[in-house]
Length: 222
Picture 1 (cartoon, rainbow, N blue to C red):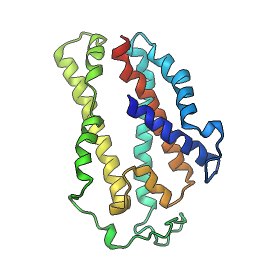
Picture 2: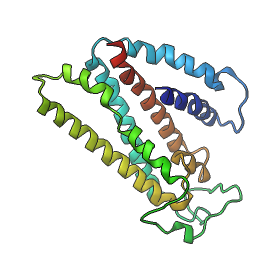
Picture 3: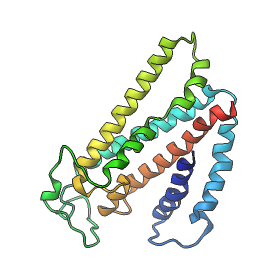
Picture 4: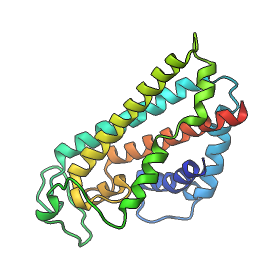
């Protein structure tokens, strides 16, 4: 759960700063991650975490999922409008490379990439599919709960998430190839730091992460 809160604390000030058109932090309270995480926790996470039935969180979870679908659609769309290398002339975007230009060679896809960061992929993938704390609460609220029905729910959910993760990673990689950053959304800053669509996606991801925390906490409060 702490990882979700850290994402909110780190990303929310940057998103607000970008929407305000600021290039540097001003020191105002609404750009302070510590203050923002307290506000979000009290006003959003705490009320949802006090829900007594998991079914009530289905609406917020559905909205959270729609935010991630929006994320995927935006990544696919950006693949069609961003050219590689990033310093190439493009009719729609002005490229901010900060002195770092990409080459045609760096825009060649590779089937496998092995480097010092490869080992980090294993725990990230494992964390992406963590869902076991919610299995029992979901099972208890299933109509005509059986092992087979629960297995079907798990299979459909995990497969849907796998497809979404795969499509996002694939189109994100095919947009930037070897230039993609560890946090993919930050890579779009090289194209346009104030792109409204990317800022909206970052906000949607923050909403999705925020609405995920009460679901993670539900087994503890139940």
